[in-house]
Image 1: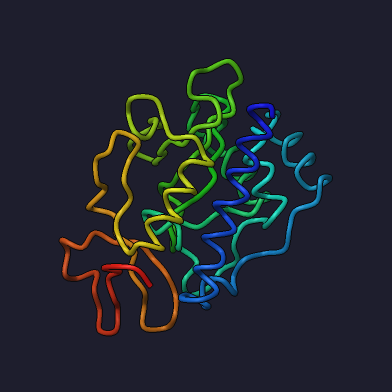
Image 2: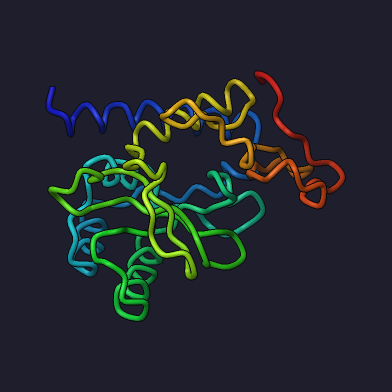
Length: 213
């Protein structure tokens, strides 16, 4: 099996676990998943940005074209929303043209309520971090995550699935715990991720995951 095919297979399996968990435990979040993007939709986004998607990223959009607006949309780590293709292309133009950021770093997610930071996927072919995750922000620039080279998208989704199933924070590739970013259920059946050290982020009815569900 080629490396691309293996990565797509792992991403598809990992996302299936995440989606099954959402439908069972956070139906408000699951309800916001948009229909699949077509091959033509993905090709149009690639043309608009002038970048070819890594195979796992294209595979994820073939399952869902991002997430719609509403309570529970920020169910990815750091309370971020998977951007629909059209919004990704708009955000990318802002990064490259207005902010003069490096080309090829595709803004996959943005924070809920405003889009001042999020996760990107590196689509620069030939780079060691190709296909890996990174963090972008208006003020902080673009940085691989973790800083020693990034996190392959399929592996990141696999770790998200494990964190939800086991009721814990993420374990980074180096084994460190991301204790500042913890999955919680809202009182309205949504999923989000917060810093548990800040009690202001825990309004009445919000439940920190602490063990399997």
